[in-house]
Image 1 (cartoon, rainbow, N blue to C red):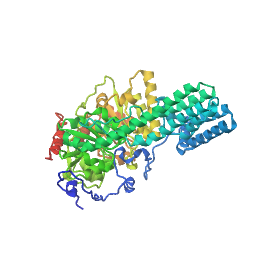
Image 2 (cartoon, helix red, strand yellow):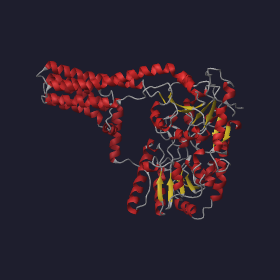
Image 3 (cartoon, rainbow, N blue to C red):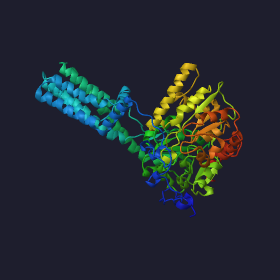
Image 4 (cartoon, one colour):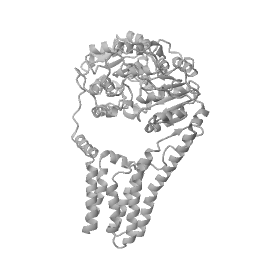
Length: 631
């Protein structure tokens, strides 16, 4: 079947109002589709496919990654977590609260009633994640209303000396808790809206974090109940209860005002975007913690020299992108929300992942849709048939094009354009900035699908120990998603322990954790290292630009199978999945380095056959052609 690109499918011209058109289904490829896709999803390399809830799947003929047995403390934590998720803790708290209230009203045993009710309020706050949030002054707003309301109503019984005033105190406290219960629904309706767009000035966040309302209410309810039982002055308690009520009422009122401001701004939004006249947009749909997908491209989009807007589909990701650009950021969650932000001046849209909701904007036929992706690698998502949706696929080198054909995915040649990887323009070739032998270990994560789990952390400790034995200072840069697989998180923690112990014993300045991630850019890690150990990820082709030696791990089969499956293996030293050949690999890398000629040849194949001088200009020229309507 002959495939056509989106411009042919959707129509060549856009009406003056840039109206959307229906998007027909893309023809399927002849090769088998991964199970995740067949079930209704799409293959991709970002969090847009909800990999946080995707467990690793066993592949036929492939041994699963070994999982370390959890410690006794870890087992207790997991059991507690299961109890919390099942709701038993909250149900037990509600039963205790009712028992405490009945004891106070019927039994007239204030001490027992108070202790029971307080325990009922505190019980749901014991899980570690809740305690960590509480240490920051944040609580689960709107949660556990029954225990706190009943404890508030018990005040009149706990302090019977002045029942009328006590009743007022009880009612004020109960009202504060009930108003708090309204906040979650209202807050959900007022996510971040827009930033840096002239003519639109809407507060994107509440002045008071709603989670703090839970803390103030809970402290007020428990504190006043204890004070009432001890015979505290009711007028003082009345004032404290009134102040406690003002906090949630104030937050609710401020949130309602923000909601009204959003509705008014929505009426002006289309005009404001049209007046700003962006030439293109950057579309981003991903979970928090993935801002690297955008930040790697923003400096180069800025260098295009045209106005543009950033369209964010997940409001939870807004906070991570807001500090890194002065360009207008527009939060548009729903399919129809996009109509107002596609003005006649807009000619192109760039995408940095294969999020399913990219199709919401691809339906605009008069725009040129360009997939940039967020890395070059041999992973299965890098040859997904989803790439056929776009008018242009900007790729780093010929390897990316050949990868589709090699895996049975037919994409018309005219959709591809080789632009290199502009992010590596500052990578040093053939040398290191470190004064001591330095190795970078940069494992990937477990992947969103079974066919993209290449993580080498199960053999990470032997790798690191072998590097230490040879006297290397180690940079350990874990993937941002490492913690999404508990076994991998434990393995990464073990590596940190090994490096920390060696640092204390030898004085070698190993870098790990935030020091090697937020404290250093990936390019700085490359320039500091004499060699790299990694796995199938975009880190490897980027490091290839340096022409320094690197090893990759074959985690899904034998070394020979790996060499046949992944083209990058021709330029790499390959570790088996149990690291049994680690010594031989490191010996070859650090002595004769027989793979050096292959690396130089592969550099052009993977990263473009053009010179290092003004390397990023190839991308800029291609992007400018698209934005100007010429390409």
